Length: 234
Image 1 (cartoon, rainbow, N blue to C red):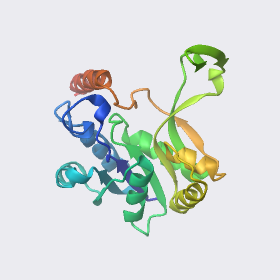
Image 2 (image 1 turned 90 degrees about the vertical axis):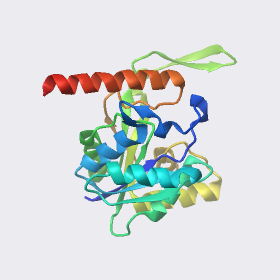
Image 3 (image 1 turned 45 degrees about the horizontal axis):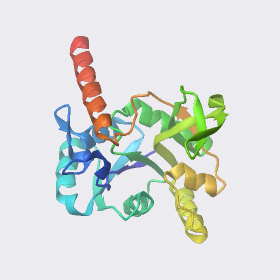
Image 4 (image 1 turned 120 degrees about the vertical axis):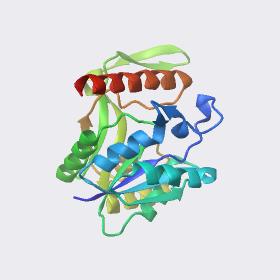
């Protein structure tokens, strides 16, 4: 089941407050984007890697791809105005002989090759699947800063990436979304809108997204912890 891995790194990460996109910041001695590139390179189900780059950073993205995409062919494409457009650019650049796609956020550096493979294999069995995290907090619905109800967390999951499906299904979902002017924040939403069932693979809580400066501080602590653990195991 060779899969086209699309790593969405086309954003500028303005909420982090840094001078450059967060995917290029140092994390444990290498750029944030390198962590995902290494995981996808090591995943047995991934046949190629498509990197979606900010318009002004294609040369730099290509340099990182050459260094960290070990053993896998890669392509670098520019992103669009939205995540939806960026992923579509990556999808259009993928190899025609690969029928599946796995979309991942570059800002989620701690995905593992095993988790990538597991989501891909679940998608093969079901038709589509995403990485997700179980909700451990009590979740409130709030309007104007007032709680209106408490949701049943036993039936809730936080959508993460990678998100895996057949390319033809995602392209069809894009067409349907375009016709109805439907805007989605992830691929699963597009598939759901198109009437396609999506399964959930629960993965490690380390697969969080770096969005704020605090997230970056936590990520650096996690990177150090992983480095220390690897040294202890050696």
